[in-house]
Image 1 (tube, one colour):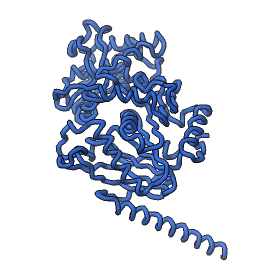
Image 2: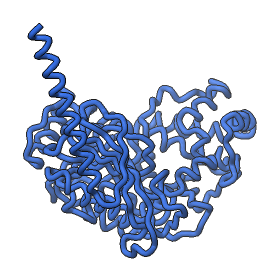
Image 3: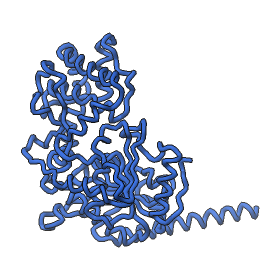
Image 4: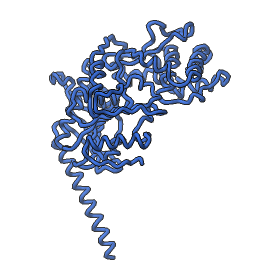
Length: 432
């Protein structure tokens, strides 16, 4: 009986501490200027979590241009823990916890990118969608939350979010102590030819030949296969106005090698010519799909394409191997993977990306994590011996698997030991 009472009293004490802790962080959030918040489900291992709307200038250089509210998710663990700011490259419709936050037991501030989903003004004036403005958004969030979290800070992001992480560190080198960009390209032109060289050399000769032969087959049989895909598109309610259906089909065939290596697909799974129409079409839809080139995708990724076509750079499709097989796309210039919003006219300026690319050679306390199979590793920050940073190009890993949890013990030990030195803390290897 006494033991039961003691257990009950202990339980009440823990509940009271939890309630007080939650009230404490909510009071701190309430005191932040121009921040609206609501409580959301708390991820495992955290004390509480919130969805925030943070007021941001459309133009950080001229606040008279107006404001929008940026969506941010806070997962709070405690005030003494480090804090990691997650630099998403796109919209962020729900809160998720990253492996960096889990590994470090860190508070996490998960930031939706400007001009995506709810983090947009009523009318998007794309001239304010630049790395300068995006980085200023993150800097403002950092300044706000340093009033709450006084410890070490990190930034991390994946893919385009990883690129954002790099540029943020370039513009505001003192905001964080460590940056961890994953699978993050730094493209130097709107058609970065390093990607072509990657696709011409990755994997075995036989695998690359099988990929090319599948592309040729799908173009040769286009008129036979497309009627079946039109029914598929109708069933998915896909519309093709930005690109015609015929253009979308040819783009999907040209995109196939990029997608194949980006997600580390199996060469032995490429269907042979004799496999038949259904197997060929299913395989193409599984690896590329038509949705990527439909109107809904063009609208969803409009901001991404604007950044790619004006400042971030991107890629195109070589056509030399397809003479006489393309009927709806040009041969020269190579078809571009950039689809600017509403087919607007815009000029590409690669000056900033080249500066950032050169800056990475001497930038300290960066941890670059890339997959050796990933197409985007072709334009990753190159290894340098002029800085105190780490570079990982993980063998056999791709865009979705180049992660700390996938490292071997030697690689992970080095990363953890380095973080312990940089952050002046002990870190448990949760993946051991």
